[in-house]
Amino acid sequence: QPIACPDCGPRLSLVPGHADPLGQAIALLQQGLIVAIKGLGGYHLAVDACNNQAVARLRQRKQRDEKPFAVMVPDLVTARLLAELEELEERLLAAPEAPVVIVRSRTATPVAELVAPDSRWIGLMLAYTPLHQLLFADTGLKALVMTSANASDEPMLSDDAEAAEQLAGIADAILTHNRVIQVRTDDSVLRVFQGRPLFYRRSRGYVPRPVPLPFDAGKILAVGAELKNTVCLTRGREAFLSQHIGDLKNEATLDTFCRTIDHLGTIMEIKPELVACDRHPDYLSTRYAEELGLPLVRVQHHHAHMASCMAENGLDGDLIGVIFDGTGLGDDGTVWGGEFLVGGYGAVERAGHLKQVRLPGGDLAAREPWRMAAAWLWEPLGDGIWQLPGMPVLAATDRQLLQAVLERGINAPLTSSMGRLFDAAAFLVGAATRNSFDGQAGMALEALAEAAAAPELLLYRLQPGTPFQLDPAPLLLGLLQRLQAGESSASLARAFHAGLAAAVVDGCDLIRQETGLDRVVLSGGVFQNRLLSELVYTFLAKSNFSVFIHRLVPPNDGGIALGQAAIAARR
Image (cartoon, rainbow, N blue to C red; front, side, top):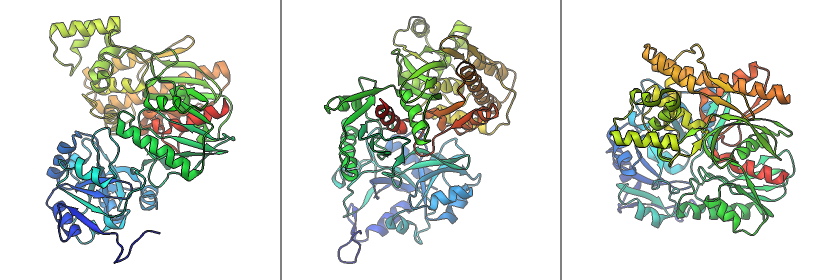
């Protein structure tokens, strides 16, 4: 039970000090200022979500240009004013877990445009602690931006001293209390897909609820991926995934990673006898696993995605895995991300994949979508790529350098990344010119496509072989031709999604003809795209495939650890 009485607390305080901490914090929010608020699993940065200037100030100070913010409201009545809610979305919002639910925003919403720029969707959550509820009680505040208080790529702040030091230049004040946060944990994020929840982030409220396994896995630790990291501990036929840890790119996140493993093992009373990790040798999680001194199983990234979806759906035996994401080290040393796999927990074969192209500039290509458009269309267009709409104006020497990069592969590794293909398509139809956060261009393309009717499918090409290759160049060229003919960008964005979904069905059908397999799992971060998932699922079902998707863990890298554990158990 919590300590909660007039004598013992909890006690609120404000930095800088004030006789009425709560009243002053509310007054600052009403004035459009930024207040850091100590919550259940860490600190949030809060501003009035209906004040565009306040939201702009928060973006500038947090250096978060365009990534959408989550919004907290006091109750369902207010939530209905901001969004068009389905029955299940309302039940999820009001549930004890109190997740952020991504819902369709109303046209006449009072929420500032800068909360979720160029998006028809908004992440809503209800006030889930008494302190949150007091911020809204008779204050006139309808909605508050609630975003995790942390520097870029670092974990959510939960320590009072660290918050006071690191938020000094961001927050105008800090509303805190004297209850220590024992375990840092972010808000869970989900949306409704086909009448059921689909996780984007599984964290507060849902962890450490076990995921049932279709077999006894013993005691295994799986350390997950580098991005959107979670870890997993198994005990018999149960798998316990940790809360969202974040991107393992710095010492602060690595420290949280280590603490999370120790804490989860302690409360679940699990001492692992085997450890599983990604095959990438440079991941911090891989190095951690290597130093444990336990028997070690290295798991290919996309195989782990496939096994994750299999495990949570209770599947066994061989099937088809359609795994689409941004990046993962492939068996051949190149960057994979558009994969058709065949097999099960024990082993898989790469039956097909998106045709490989150069990643010009390496990581820079993930931030500048024009580079991927150039890479995909260099072969059919050559120098004609410089006439593509929206291409940057480069000096002759820079053009020659890019051409050399594409022809010779200097600082341009090969990739079959589906995420980067979405970047190229988003650039070509004018949906996005940059990725300031992971998946931004893909999200923009999806939002644009949702506004259009389903058009005639554009052509793509399946190149036979072992493995077969999906060549989307004709699809991209078709987008350009129709754009020049005056067709709307929204219609073309929809056509891209539909054409890609049709290609998935044809690829799976090729595999079925050779293997007789008719079960398909869909996994990888690209399947957070609601429209693509809907089209692929529908098209496959109409072609008499049994289709399985994620429900208990995210399709993105937040679910990787579950797949690693399942594969390690079988091996």
